[in-house]
Length: 372
Ligand code: ATP
Ligand code: MG
Image 1: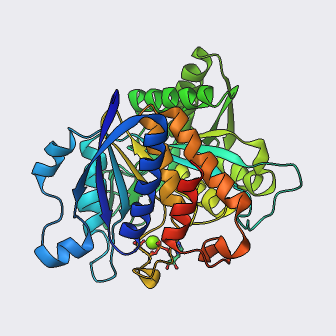
Image 2 (image 1 turned 30 degrees about the vertical axis):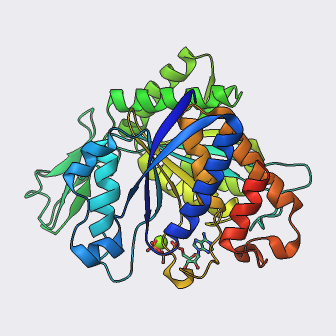
């Protein structure tokens, strides 16, 4: 066999193992159809494992993972574990260690998937949100609890031009959070978004911004992102994130690749997940220079776990993102097409339960695999 990939699997908790099993089934099917090999390394980490052993994610695993080309993740989380422990201990740790600076969230409306805002006849929704994953308001720079003077803000807040913006006259508690943008980070995420836009045959890149209210931070973003985009021959356009949300709901077919600073990307991608059909079909990826991590947007859904009822399409579409990232573009497109063909051709009772059918998790996985 010519090409072969080593893939780590962390199925995790709740419906994670069920949906990952179907994603793996589909990936195996497309690999044998396209003639590449796969070897899987299974990891047990997640809430279940933590409750049993007290172990979250040992350092040694980070080293081991460097020999893998991708990580397929199910869902991590359980109501019995305090919120944040596993997110920080597993997901964030992996993200930082492997410097996964790109968060990808495609939003495509597949046939038969009920949409909260139905598309007009002949219109399609097929967007890609490229979210910067390392900076903005998520860098943990800030202060709270003290008076403005304790926080080092002296008697007021000034703009970069030295103009007074806010004056603190009376002592009071206060808090502030800093949004960070570095040239390197903005340029590398923009370059990545441009490559993806070019790969999709697009001619423009849209940046979600808010430079009118936050000129330093997002003005800088606009300047750097424009330069990177125009260098690659694409048209650069900016839109304020509030207006973007408005237009995404009303005319989702007008948008293609949307580049977002971290916080706007967080918000816009959830909006788009809802608009394009909800958690059952929302796929996600975290990508860097090394190992990429691919996981459905949904969580562990303990209410339907271990009943063969979960919709595996989000996990299957996340696996398609993984194939694309591995360079198996044709295989990735085939998986996406197989999901489309399954949805278009399924009898109503064959659809996933989430879409009003009676198709079990495994039956849906089998049906998608049969289209490959
Ligand atoms: P976590 O704490 O891991 O995020 P959660 O309880 O928040 O888990 P989510 O997975 O985020 O659960 O989803 C919320 C609800 O949406 C679930 O309770 C479930 O009913 C539904 N849901 C989520 N994913 C799926 C899916 N793949 N198929 C069917 N229903 C789903
Ligand atoms: Mg959740």
